[in-house]
Image 1: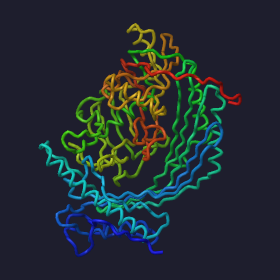
Image 2: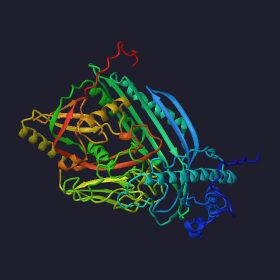
Image 3: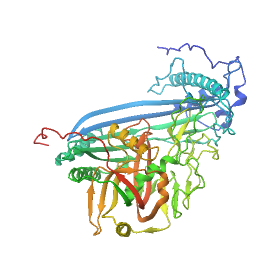
Length: 602
């Protein structure tokens, strides 16, 4: 059966013989990469190349902006998802999908259709979206053609809206270009899919979920597995053509309990790897999940925490979790979109936006993001990647030197003072652009003290201040594993206390440290007024460091299991001693405990 070619309404991309002028305004794959040889069996690559070449012959209706940039991206993935609870598998799904993305920019590198509140919005009908799973050249070309047509129409509409908004706005500062140029790169790597034994994974997940059955304090629990295998291919009109493995193996688990006074308590763990051969063994995962269960058991029997203001020691793992938020989330600087005067624009700026050249950490600290590193002390780093979502290879970036903020993580959307990409477009963004995100963030201090001595210093500080105890934080709730309502309460409390525009994850494991060195676990505390500016007040760093891996899901506090896009990341950090932090219990009403005890088998 011959594939049906839809008759597109209001065709804006037109064939040979119509208005011309596009070829002169664009740099084309074939002309820039005449040596790019594609084997006959690489059907997808040939379809992308040929459709980009054909675009050279396309013209536009008189008066319209010509395209200057085209990009095709395809993720070809196989997934396995398994959910288990209380020792039983409750859901299994195996899927194969091809997720395409087409980008068309009209205008020029200096001024194009992106950066407006309605960039990318298209009011017409959509005909693409039926990407074939079979390697069929004609179908590939058809879908690329349809998606290009829609992307071009959306770009033209966005450009018109952007110009209208400019006409309605007063002149502002000197404009920043909308897109930066990069040197094209060709890297077509061979890809493979390691064999996945579905039945073995089902058995393994059931065994892991059964761990929580041994803890009567755990009232509910769950374990999730997500295996994603398959390459990503990107080709654009500048000459870039890359293909690379885009695999991820991810297990996360959560356990919940309830204190006698009704407070809901939980702990969670996220375990991820880019390579199946380097994924933790079942024994290692059992140990991690048992630790979660033990933490819930301890929290259920722990006393309430009280409001506190004073010295706080944050151990290396918790410090890495904290810096992933206060540093990592602020090292990207999104551009405020253009809109009509008086219109409310959803926008969350970086807290570092105007602080280049200013001190953000003590003078002894240096911070580097280096996604080119694949291991640290023999352990694989989750934040390693070959190319970002724009086909740009990451560069090591020294973001903080001697406590001073020097630069940002950037994409191909220039920001004032930083015109070029350093390869950190890792997540989809808003308003027609990508969002920067950390890869491997290394936080180092030239002046360190053993953690045991930092604990002694904490005790000395509390004695000097006349405090009955100091506070020690061992683990934060990051990635966030509480409920959506708890996140809303946290965000509201943060804004009311003068904290960060983005709420900071609360401690899960926090201890009172008494003068004799004894530690007492408490529950129910969260930070008050904690922002990125607090980092300037770090008193000391530990000589011990810890590597913390997580999955950035483009959701607040990297909510566990949320989001449709995944950017694994790592943070390596020492422990941090603060002269003074504030902690407070939430003011939320507590639910009642279950009226009937759980079944005897639980």
